[in-house]
Image (cartoon, rainbow, N blue to C red):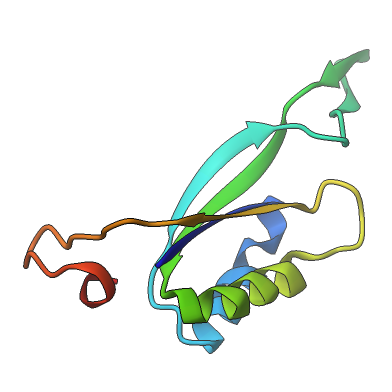
Length: 112
Protein backbone atom coordinates (compact mmCIF):
# COMPACT_ATOMS: atom_id res chain seq x y z
CA UNK A 1 0.00 0.00 0.00
CA UNK A 2 1.16 3.51 -0.76
CA UNK A 3 0.38 6.94 0.57
CA UNK A 4 0.65 9.63 -2.07
CA UNK A 5 0.97 13.23 -0.95
CA UNK A 6 0.71 15.89 -3.62
CA UNK A 7 1.25 19.62 -3.18
CA UNK A 8 -0.56 21.49 -5.95
CA UNK A 9 -1.79 24.96 -6.87
CA UNK A 10 -5.21 25.67 -5.34
CA UNK A 11 -6.95 26.41 -8.63
CA UNK A 12 -6.02 22.93 -9.94
CA UNK A 13 -7.87 21.09 -7.14
CA UNK A 14 -11.11 20.56 -9.06
CA UNK A 15 -9.25 19.26 -12.12
CA UNK A 16 -7.21 16.83 -10.00
CA UNK A 17 -10.22 15.66 -7.99
CA UNK A 18 -12.23 14.98 -11.15
CA UNK A 19 -9.34 13.14 -12.81
CA UNK A 20 -8.86 10.96 -9.74
CA UNK A 21 -12.58 10.26 -9.57
CA UNK A 22 -12.49 9.21 -13.23
CA UNK A 23 -9.91 6.48 -12.43
CA UNK A 24 -11.89 5.20 -9.46
CA UNK A 25 -10.33 6.95 -6.47
CA UNK A 26 -13.08 7.22 -3.87
CA UNK A 27 -11.48 9.28 -1.14
CA UNK A 28 -8.70 11.66 -0.24
CA UNK A 29 -7.78 14.16 2.43
CA UNK A 30 -7.23 17.78 1.43
CA UNK A 31 -5.42 20.40 3.50
CA UNK A 32 -4.78 24.06 2.75
CA UNK A 33 -1.07 24.67 3.28
CA UNK A 34 1.52 27.35 2.58
CA UNK A 35 5.07 26.93 1.45
CA UNK A 36 7.71 27.75 -1.09
CA UNK A 37 10.33 26.07 -3.20
CA UNK A 38 12.10 27.43 -6.24
CA UNK A 39 9.19 29.82 -6.69
CA UNK A 40 10.40 31.80 -3.64
CA UNK A 41 7.15 33.75 -3.27
CA UNK A 42 6.18 36.89 -5.12
CA UNK A 43 5.71 40.64 -4.63
CA UNK A 44 2.30 42.21 -4.11
CA UNK A 45 1.13 45.79 -3.70
CA UNK A 46 -1.23 46.54 -0.81
CA UNK A 47 -2.42 50.11 -0.20
CA UNK A 48 0.41 51.44 -2.30
CA UNK A 49 3.15 49.55 -0.47
CA UNK A 50 5.05 46.69 -2.07
CA UNK A 51 5.75 43.64 0.05
CA UNK A 52 7.05 40.11 -0.47
CA UNK A 53 4.75 37.13 0.03
CA UNK A 54 7.19 34.44 1.15
CA UNK A 55 4.80 31.51 1.50
CA UNK A 56 2.52 30.64 -1.37
CA UNK A 57 -0.92 29.11 -0.75
CA UNK A 58 -1.05 25.47 -1.85
CA UNK A 59 -3.28 22.42 -1.46
CA UNK A 60 -1.97 19.15 -0.04
CA UNK A 61 -3.74 15.98 -1.16
CA UNK A 62 -3.26 12.72 0.72
CA UNK A 63 -4.38 9.58 -1.10
CA UNK A 64 -3.93 5.98 0.04
CA UNK A 65 -4.00 3.29 -2.65
CA UNK A 66 -2.83 -0.23 -3.36
CA UNK A 67 0.72 -0.55 -4.64
CA UNK A 68 -0.63 -1.64 -8.03
CA UNK A 69 -2.69 1.57 -8.35
CA UNK A 70 0.03 3.99 -7.20
CA UNK A 71 1.67 4.71 -10.55
CA UNK A 72 -1.70 5.40 -12.18
CA UNK A 73 -2.60 7.86 -9.41
CA UNK A 74 0.79 9.58 -9.66
CA UNK A 75 0.45 10.04 -13.41
CA UNK A 76 -3.14 11.25 -13.07
CA UNK A 77 -2.22 13.88 -10.46
CA UNK A 78 0.80 14.99 -12.44
CA UNK A 79 -1.16 15.41 -15.66
CA UNK A 80 -4.13 17.15 -14.06
CA UNK A 81 -2.07 19.54 -11.89
CA UNK A 82 0.48 20.49 -14.56
CA UNK A 83 0.42 24.06 -15.85
CA UNK A 84 4.00 23.99 -17.12
CA UNK A 85 4.95 26.91 -14.89
CA UNK A 86 7.10 27.14 -11.80
CA UNK A 87 5.26 26.27 -8.59
CA UNK A 88 3.16 23.40 -9.99
CA UNK A 89 4.05 21.36 -6.92
CA UNK A 90 5.51 18.04 -5.83
CA UNK A 91 4.35 14.46 -5.36
CA UNK A 92 5.67 12.31 -2.51
CA UNK A 93 5.15 8.53 -2.35
CA UNK A 94 5.49 6.54 0.89
CA UNK A 95 5.01 2.90 1.75
CA UNK A 96 2.43 2.13 4.42
CA UNK A 97 2.87 -0.67 6.88
CA UNK A 98 -0.74 -1.00 7.98
CA UNK A 99 -4.17 0.62 7.58
CA UNK A 100 -7.08 0.09 9.97
CA UNK A 101 -10.64 1.35 9.49
CA UNK A 102 -11.76 2.65 12.89
CA UNK A 103 -15.47 1.83 12.49
CA UNK A 104 -15.18 -1.81 11.40
CA UNK A 105 -11.64 -2.86 12.26
CA UNK A 106 -10.98 -3.82 8.63
CA UNK A 107 -7.31 -3.83 7.75
CA UNK A 108 -5.06 -2.98 4.84
CA UNK A 109 -6.69 -3.18 1.37
CA UNK A 110 -10.13 -3.76 2.91
CA UNK A 111 -9.71 -0.54 4.89
CA UNK A 112 -8.91 1.58 1.85
